[in-house]
Length: 249
Length: 249
DNA sequence: GCCGATTTGTCCGTATGTATC
DNA sequence: CGATACATACGGACAAATCGG
Image 1: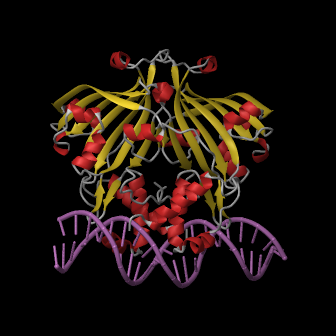
Image 2: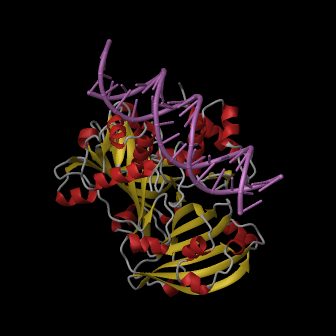
Image 3: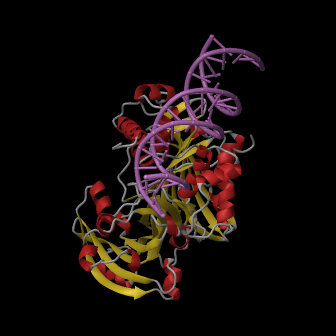
């Protein structure tokens, strides 16, 4: 099957909502109506709806129905719950992107670096510093650590393009989970050397640890963003009467 | 039933993982083993596991199993996907919290305010400014807008305690979904008047729109945090071969 | 307040597909 | 190749919440 059924239904409903096919604030057709329309089981419709709940498009309520709470929103540099490479984010937000590698070395994790990155002491790592430009201006300074044993053949040339594309397409690695933390930090001399912060003296910092399909931590990245371009979106639910979360792209 | 089955299993597995009952980096018992242990159906075990995936505790892989990728992590001021009041966050992170109301008024949304907050023009709103202190120091400055028709009887005294407790316990409202955006902004004179930023000149800003169970937008809040205490965590998955997301607290 | 219809929430069992080993 | 394990999908049953008469 080229595409799973629940994903197709999810996408169909999503576009309909975005196109305004269902009035905002009103109920969508019931699950029974939808499974009749799509010719599928109830579980499949429910998976699709759960994806829309997670995206903040709709809200469900037992005994009542599914309310449309869609509101068009400014595209964000980062979306909750989704791993995207810099190039992919730029494409989604329709911006011109380029990358410059300013440092590329092989090193070994000592005790301090291990504590900071989550790798075990003694792990061999590529340490890469990169500057990402958006529409010509330097906006993001990245410290990347990649586990060398998971990323053989990595070169500065690859790092200047898309490392993720190399890992996924050339090495056949599959990237699965990433634990991310967002903080705000004072600018360092290194930040200022590469990024024109203007009147700001802080950066938005996203620190992430990424795991491959073997469950191995293969990347630790500290991504330091110009505050003016950083924007992260999230949809949250109240745990009390918490509904499903499923489906989605 | 006092508690749903899938939630109970989710919690059981979660505590086991936290307690180190399953070796990190190894596979958990298979779904078949778990459904035998818990005496439930496959779907129920899968919902519990999906919750652990969402929390970044485990990773699943078709044909292989469920890997434990748990790593203890610094408690965060904010967690992805979960709505928490200030008081609840403080309790979770074991910090002493207090709140001071510095402004409390009833106003009407004009065109500009409507665009900024997402309410419709003409909506009657409570506008509240509050300072949250953590361990005695002022750390967060909040601009709250509440739809007056949804929050009758709101007073400065209530706002000095927990507004959410009033809404949920006294008014019987149920809070469901919140759309949040994180940005970094320059400090304003108002920020500086209430919060000692020290050497910083920016704040971490979380803007949220919250909906009640009727699907009505009843709150718009701009929460401006001292950068040193702001910390937001997220678990992301790569969309390509994306697994389920379900369950969880 | 009660009752019944509707709607979502939970759970079960089964079958089949696909990836891994 | 077969055995194992997760992924998808179907169908049915009952519970719980909502709403209208």
